[in-house]
Image 1 (tube, rainbow, N blue to C red):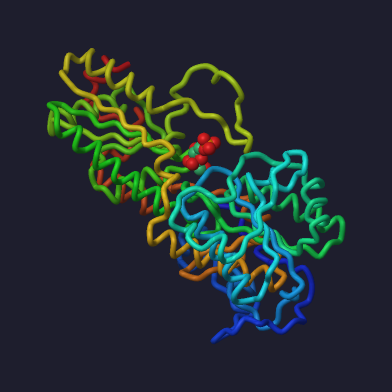
Image 2: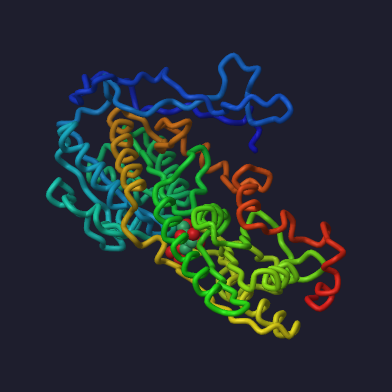
Length: 454
Ligand code: F6P
């Protein structure tokens, strides 16, 4: 939890809003309308609440402003999708384009191809003209019609491109790496004293962006992952001592594994990056797996890709980080497969293990109805924010409201599954796995098998 005194959710504007909005709203939103950051009163815990301050920490509400900064008739906007693919990207692109075109009358809209590369002439990616015809049915497809890429590009080169094209707003659809790139863009724009806005939309199946309850793509990824868990369960129950082992994406955060397990209700063990576990020893995972097989004759094990990285000895081969600066992980799924098999053989237990890695399938699909709805509104809200001149912000979702959140706050924070929180507690309850799988909390009854597992 960050020090509440260090948090600043104030939103920057390109300039004063003097243009009457052409957008016809039943009700306009003012900058003074806010929603509280911390809504739980718990005097026994510091919940990041600046309780004694005159103005409690809060987020500005998103929505149409009566007066806007840019003149839509003269405006030119760009869109870019960056980072890994995510269900709902095309829904956001479509919503932004239709909102700009029909509700504000913006006619010059450009899509930059393959992420931030599209803004750098050296790559030679041509910008695409976007209008209602170009985006008419793209929301039915997975992926991004603009393509995507990882990795930062020179902010100077990107701002040169924005200036050359005389763009007033760039919409950046992406996750934490994209937010860092968008913030670097904002700083370069400010340095040059330009009137260009940068508005981001939070995309990631991992749901690990701070200060938003949800990112688009997460619901779809969890739905597909839950189906995969059902498959693992069918395989596990289809054999004597059947083990269904499933690896799911989730580099630093275990939200997909935890939520898919809760949705399917078929997982018996869930391993996430935020919660330590050991394999052997009195209270390690392996003796508990054996007990589960002895009692129930099948087990489903779900492991998030970032879990158990401490179990690998030595350095990974190749680059330590990817183009987005994320640590390259070792394959915990395959390690678990080997270690479970070795252990059960050693224990002379007959078993069948089926290993399932749905990999990119969980993020390349079209969005679920819930994600489409969410992604579409995020896109609409991003347009309201951009026209109002908001910059250096992303559209968040907090207390059931769409909000404006400074990118600077998001890149300084992180969002992880709380091992002490209700969500993880629900996972423990629903799987029946021990709350602690490290040997400090050993159950003496398991000591014999544990010796063999070491
Ligand atoms: O960040 C989203 C995500 O899908 C992670 O869950 C996963 O670790 C990563 O992207 C993989 O991305 P890529 O292989 O495209 O670099």
